[in-house]
Amino acid sequence: MAVLESREWYMAAYAPEGVPLSDHLKLRTINLPLNSDSIPDQHVAVEVLWISVDPYIRSRMTGHDGGLYFPQFGLGEVITEFAIGRVVLSKDGNFSEGDIVINPFSPVAEYSVVPTAVLRKVDPTAGIELPDYLSALGLPGFTAWLGIDVIGEAKPGSNVFISAAAGGVGMFAGQLAKLKGCRVVGSAGSDDKVIS
Image (cartoon, rainbow, N blue to C red; front, side):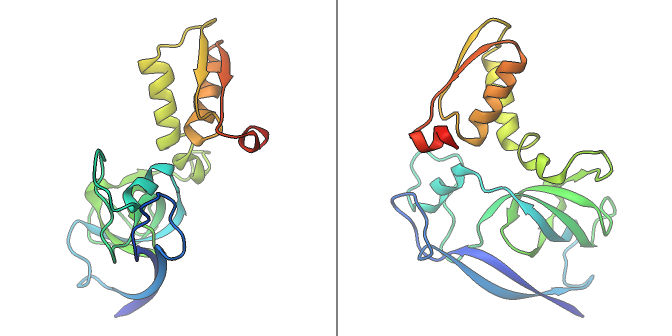
């Protein structure tokens, strides 16, 4: 039986102020057995290649459940995020070793075994850089498109104000509005964010 050593980030303590530090997030190493008997059907073992660290994840680390659309991480639980990975072992006929996949609930770990129901394959020969699937073509880009195109229905010549313009969603929203021929004004929380 092959055994992979994998490092993973887990919640050691809640960060009630919303800013997790090294006391809250810890790194541990686990042994992950890899063979056809150790992986359930409709699961794959994935090597994580890229992880998106999105701001909303901080709200899942506070220990306060009020008003969240995702539950808090449990203490001792591996945190999850959007990630792109490579299948290293499959127990699902729809996925093969070497497939590149996007997982919206990927454990933040070097290797993990995950259900295939949430995975989406990516064509690595499509001419799109893999990190773009987590940014412009990922959650930040989709959220910006939804706001500008679907909800805002921005038209050429419209004035568009982007709050939090220095963030991932705000940057894409501003670019999408500009591409539509809008006049864009953005704000950021500090002068430092405006400069960078």
